[in-house]
Amino acid sequence: MQKKFVNTDLVVVDPKKVDIDYDYVLPRVERKIFWEISSVLFTVAPHTIHKAMRAKYDLSPSYLRVREKAENTRIADTVSGLLQYELTKNRFIETGINYTQIYEEMHFEGKKRFSNQYNFVEVPLLLGFQNRNSR
Image 1 (tube, helix red, strand yellow):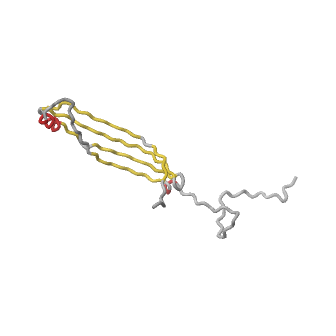
Image 2 (tube, one colour):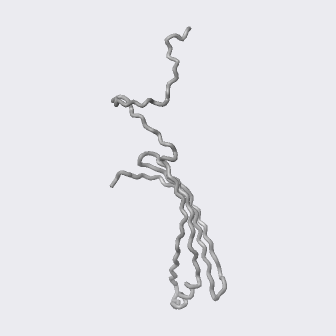
Image 3 (cartoon, one colour):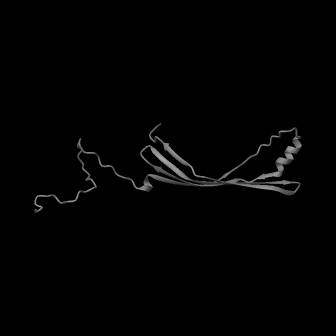
């Protein structure tokens, strides 16, 4: 059988832009690329740490002052990287990685008694809603 009167043109996936508004035609939606609907945040931040000493037993205030001066707490360092991706107009998902390091050491009578180092790694995951047009 011959292929007469058969439309053999391929269907075009990309719709044509029309300047006239029809009631029965859906408007063309422009898709944004990945970098237009996402944002990246890098942070390097110091944190200060203060320890409050409360004794369980009846200790003299002078001993507590000497003990507090003997402890050195260094400023904690935090490095983080976050990626926020816009799912729809108001909903987004955010994830990343946070690394925090805390170091402290105790000197008593001029000698180093002990030191502690704490390392924390966090992987936050946030599914959120934000209304940018709200007042």
